[in-house]
Length: 375
Image (tube, rainbow, N blue to C red):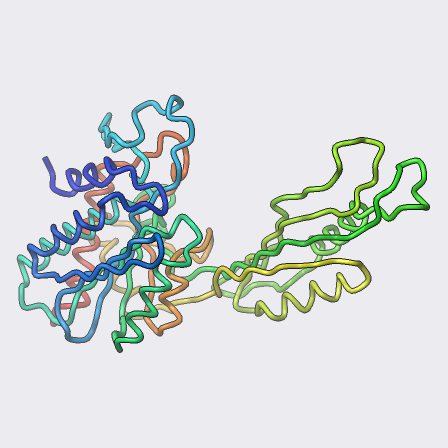
């Protein structure tokens, strides 16, 4: 069997629901040791991480990824068992088959082949792997980056294996991401009988006014790299369970995905100006700052490799959710996300196309060739 497919299946067959790595990192460390990599396991609280590296010279090229997956949902709804790694009609099925165990397998095999062909390549190659990307992301990549910085290890190029592609492998790569700022808003009122509203203060009405105002704001118009900043309400909670009682409080959770045209502090200030006439409490959570990697050596290497392997011209994008690239980019590294298609990620019957997985492995290998060999 093809080595990339075989390794993909081995990883999928480990039920590594976040934050449980379930032995994936040990498997990868042992595998890469055969190509001259050394591994440092880094555990922070209940999260397993690995820094696996070959060489000590610059430039340092790093593959980044996560071994954890989201829960399967009802397993009886899956066509094939979610942790079987079943192959049918040219598709590899299972949780993590798209997000993103296949990319990790492709990275690993690409490195093995590249090193076998070019054992005296320039620079160094590293793997930054975590089991805390799908969860809170507090003890994963961000902690590994802190460890690397404390040891004066600087990443020059980082390729994150997130499923960036849209319709076919390589049609889209991510060279940046929007920032993510979340909030939990509590509006205080005064509980009372619905028949005597003059004796109560309805927090639901006030919350509705606030959310309507915030959703109508134009935060910015975006720029050449980013779409305009967006505001979305994700949850609302209020009421006592009785239909004749005005509740004493109401809550909402919202998220703002923002471009480089506005800062988190500016967003918070604008929200505060809307809230100043209400009795409220608000708790903010900044999940990540926006970042952009302009066209340069890494972006060019990825575009060229995709063209060589697939014959298509890739599109640069900053859309979608956040990724662990948000922790790596602030160090000054060039960061790009390139992986398989994302149509089935987090869904029942997650799957990926085997032919496109082979293209991904070859694309990774070509990127290494572009950046770590004398041209």
